[in-house]
Amino acid sequence: MPVILLDDVVISVENNGFTVEDFVGYVKKDTTFYMGFKHLRYFTHDYESELHIFNKKGNIIGTLKKEGTHYSNGEKAWLFNDTIFDEGKIFKRNGDYKYYTPEAFDEVFFPKDTIDVSLKMTDGKNKEDSQNMRDAKTIGFSIGTDEVEQSKGGVSKKLAIFDIDMQQYYDYTISDTTYNGRACYVFTVKVKEELKAREKDKALIRKIVSYFDKENFNVIYREYKFVYDYWLIDLDMDVVVHMDYVNEKHIPTDIHYKGFWDVLFFKPERAEFKLKNTNYLVD
Image 1 (cartoon, helix red, strand yellow):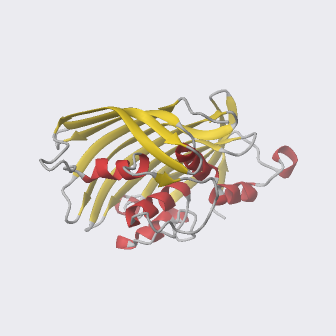
Image 2: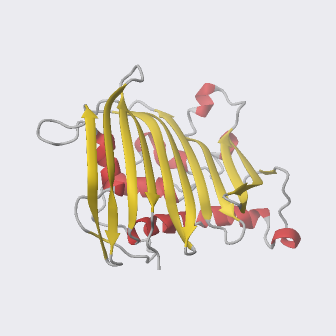
């Protein structure tokens, strides 16, 4: 158990029905965030996305916008793009993307082919997922995990933010707030401000903030800050996810990514991506 700071909130069996240790256990074992993204694929909805690619000076050199509908019959899902707009350096002459970033977001949010969908929770790995997709799922949905398969530069170790060896780099705080009219617990894991630069370099995850709905402990807001500089990898990324309810189903509404990454054998990429999901058809 790391040392937990309680910021103007009291956590006890008498007041909350659980202890601070229980709370941290809920955080580490949470599946609600993952289920929200399974709902994203399982239910029909409309989407609008906007992607910008930047040069070193921060000027936009490529733009890709999509609007359409994600259809699902509860077993299969497929997409229909109403409009696609691109400008600047997005595609090669053969129609392939010039950059990896739009390709990665297509794999996650805009699959080209019909895909299987299910609300079944499973620990089994989808053989159809790429290694990057599997790692993205692990990092995105399992806070504190060390089960990332690609361990370049000890990445898997650096993701284990509750590990005893990593606790020296972080402050852990529980507070509360109101989000979309709902009372929430806020769990924040943040790199200690007093650390020297070389010490901060040992913490890939610089910040994670999660809002847990007090009524059911669903994650209804989460933000990540990743910074990593190793000889094979250099990245600085921010991800923010807003969640909501439709007919009591937990769904992602707004997703925002902004980041830079430079990986060996690839050209450096600076990008910003926004996705808005609306009009969910939930029974």
